[in-house]
Image 1 (cartoon, rainbow, N blue to C red):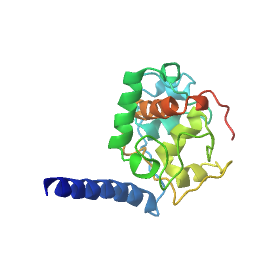
Image 2: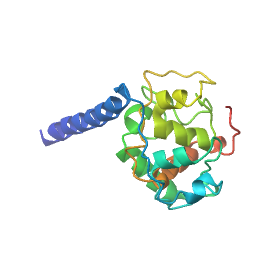
Image 3: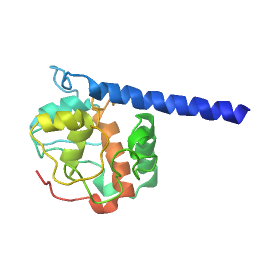
Length: 188
């Protein structure tokens, strides 16, 4: 009986996480960005973007960095199991698994383990996609370059993740389960 109750509570919790993420995407308002200067972002606008342990909020880094200027500071560490696991834990706690599966193999949204990247495989595009969501990314001038089974739009997580470093570690986890995606050129 205890296992059944625990299982039901787990399902309710995961459904709640997905609902919160989906509601964040379903609003009619575009993703908001703060007008304050990024915490570590003086360098972001100057082309010296993306250092490990950056505490700049993701939306601030997106706002301060020109298109093509976001680069994962951990790309040379995708084989670092501890770093990938840290990114995996953040991936799970942010609720990414609700749509993309616990290991990134897909679910109701695209798998992160194959080479079909709907908007492009490069660091800059992935960081902006996760931060702004798919609707925000399209509003910023991006378009689909490949097709994949997608049930709905990706919600924006730039206001949920506290730091750019958290997002870079999630992207590092994704790269660890899909190493062929590292270093791919931008498609937009």
